[in-house]
Image 1 (cartoon, rainbow, N blue to C red):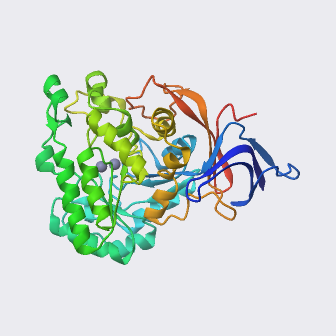
Image 2 (image 1 turned 60 degrees about the vertical axis):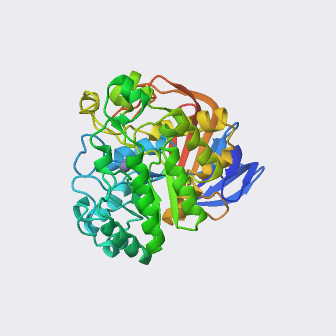
Image 3 (image 1 turned 90 degrees about the horizontal axis):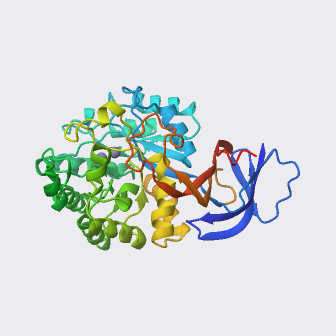
Length: 429
Ligand SMILES: [Zn+2]
Ligand SMILES: [Zn+2]
């Protein structure tokens, strides 16, 4: 099988390549990247005029709800949404029912994902049952195919356990991925603690609930020489802690989600529970700090924390509504619109956070666009607009505060392991 992607702008964030050329794919590999590849004996030609041709995007933080809540989202269903959104690889968080804390369950996810269009890399729990009491059988989980460990959805409150976990992962060069929340401080709050929560009369979650846990975990990472990845950073103060840790040479990386560089806690007034997530949306000062953190490299990764919820559950009063929003389908449009168009990021800077950087942290050996590499490729038209509405969103759950927004950045083709797994209607010539 031969596919040619013609006339696109090739951007490979890792090597710094930025040039107009064609890409020849033979079976599941990139055979050649060169201008003017002849059309002869290609089975298919994809027109990428005016488009970026990028390494297949990687989302290292999604929730697909299977096993247990297949009524909300399944591994295959979530994979189809991811392919449509430009992602060729996702990492699934283990807080399903049951949680992914043994090898059979890790294998189940991988087997189920083989029926879908993209690569799915399971993250397994740090502790058995995610109960925060006993470390899971990490060696077996790695053998089954786990690429990292997290009790996401809840923090590891006991410091001694976090110390042990960071010691164990040294054997595998895999990260402990933390949901940084001090439950005593967050204390059932529903939004960021500050002027807006006071004005709205809603219970706040102080930024310190996030920051004290990050501070503890980088200190324990220094002690153990383990590997730490901080999920969903939302506060400028957290970035100060992570910057100091990186300066000291501590093995820490971190991610933020598109909503933290796009929205502030003022969205709660209009969107109510649709803008409820953990950590909560913060202030404009934090939003600016997150954008600067992405620019200066303190933030390594953009991950969506894609968290589907059924409408009747999510649209309850804010106190009862579950935390989280869907993120896959809005990720590329928000990166292009907010980072590239509004804040002058180069495509290379912006998309490093969705390609080579997550690949490096999790040793995925993906996220590169070069001769000989796996043909995972995403083609995006950055100047074409999309409107986030019920027609655009194919996800079964539509819990997003971006509903109604018109944004730049349209995914035209997604190619995974040499197969075209998504093409936009316009791409269907
Ligand atoms: Zn979390
Ligand atoms: Zn999460």
